[in-house]
Length: 92
Image 1: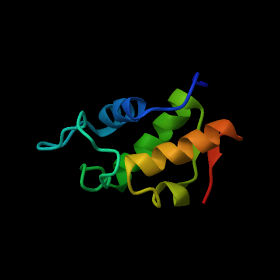
Image 2: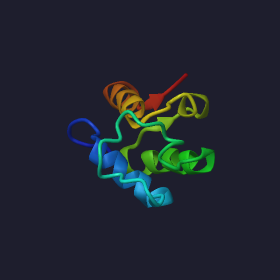
Image 3: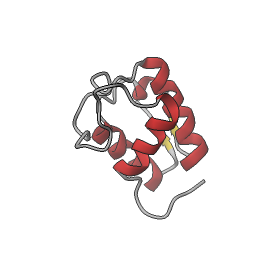
Image 4: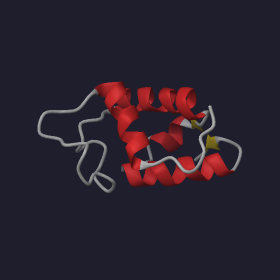
């Protein structure tokens, strides 16, 4: 499903919460844009689920190799929004 406008941090946080919830001691409502996914409690399995949800919610497919290169929500948002402006696939 395409989205009007760029995917926001709020959109990404909703997907993160849907996929793996929220670790104790981590406030996803805070300033997390530049925090490492691992520091937020998201391991490789959770990130694969995030990738699947991006396809479902936004029609954007994250190449597996590229997915694991994206260390922070800000990096993921940049790539997703670039893909949304192009062909809908984030590649390495």
